[in-house]
Image 1 (tube, rainbow, N blue to C red):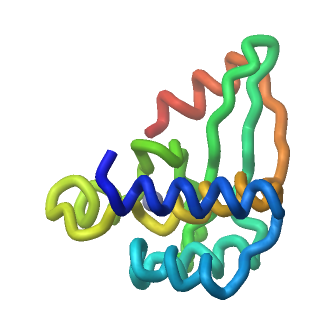
Image 2: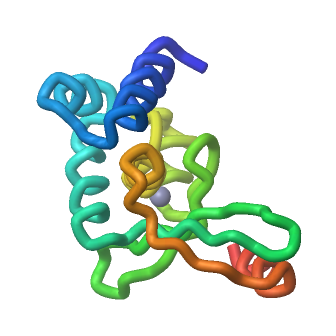
Length: 132
Ligand SMILES: [Zn+2]
C-alpha cells in the first residue's frame, strides 16, 4: 500500500472511532482522493451504499448506486475492486486515481456506519457475482 493510501486508511480509522468527519479529515481525504471525494459524498447523501451479507456463509460484499442517469449498481470491494468503468480506466489502466468514487463512498459509509444493510442467500450472492 502506498503512503497516500496509508494516510487515507488512518483517517478513515479516526472517522470510524468518532463516527463523524471533521474539516481536517475532509481536507486530508480531498488531497488524497481529489474530485472523486465529491462524487463519493453525493453517493453517501443518497444512501447509495448497501452492505450485502450472504447467509449462511456470512460473506460480505458492497453494492453502490452509480450517479449516471441509469442509476447502475456496482459491486464494489473497497480495498481492491469496483465493477465501474472508471475503476478500470482511471484506477487500473491510467493509474491517475487511487480509488473510484464508489470505493471511497464504500470506505466512508463503512467508517461512518451509514451503509444500508441487506441480506441475501449464498445462491443469490453467487448470481450477483456472476454478473460482474
Ligand atoms: Zn466504481
